[in-house]
Image (cartoon, rainbow, N blue to C red; front, top):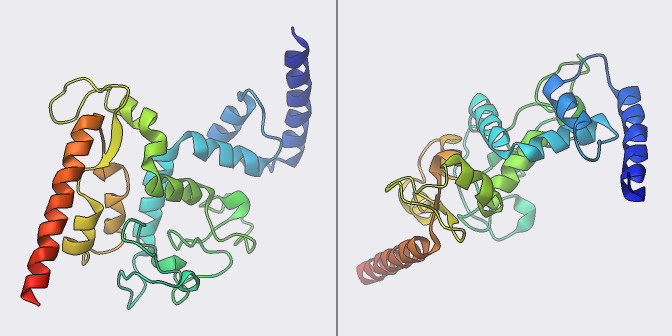
Amino acid sequence: MSAWQEQRAQRNRQSVVRLRRALPDIFPSAVLSRALNRPFVPPTPRLAIDSYWRAHPLRADRLARALAAKSGPPAGWTWRLGVSRNSGLPATFRSPPAPYRECAFAGGAGFCCVCGQPVYRFGWHTDLWNAGLNKNATWHCACVIAWQFWNAPSGEARLLRRLQARRRAQSGSRLWKNAEVDHRVPLFRVWTELRDTSWPKLLDYWGLPNLQVINREVHVAKCADEARERSAARAVSMSAV
């Protein structure tokens, strides 16, 4: 064993001791199993949970959308854009609509600003410990990862490529190494044509149901077609005025 491996082993032994000392009587078994098998064992339950969701962004995506469906939209909410960051409104239609991030509808401490559901101990989404709301949190650990995934799905290109068996969804032809993540329904069309879709069904257009991996040259051609479509729509709008 090299000196570095010995240092890592010593660090992991210390982390395991810290983790087990801090563990409550009830803890998600899948999270604990993964934590104990990491090359670097997370030393706290919260870090173990964070590590678990970071390793499973698609599960986080599904869970966040399911929790949002449980909450439903706040009364009187509509999808709008804003210019002030303090309002909580997204500055662009490329950002997922999130009513509970807006100042007017935020649930406050103990409620997730993405899905609107209560946040419990360790940022978990169910109260396994009968400890009540976590007043120090406004995010579920899973919703943090889902939010990052929705805003930057290209970061999970390798995972999505593997999910498609490294084949294009339409033709079945091989995906090359330069393949890129694409939204099947472009987000500008979601904003212009599907804006009245009920929330959180809108989130499907940022999540896995609307994502695909396509070869770069196909993606470039698709983006060019979409740009021409947007340009033509603007021309028609201006001529009508």
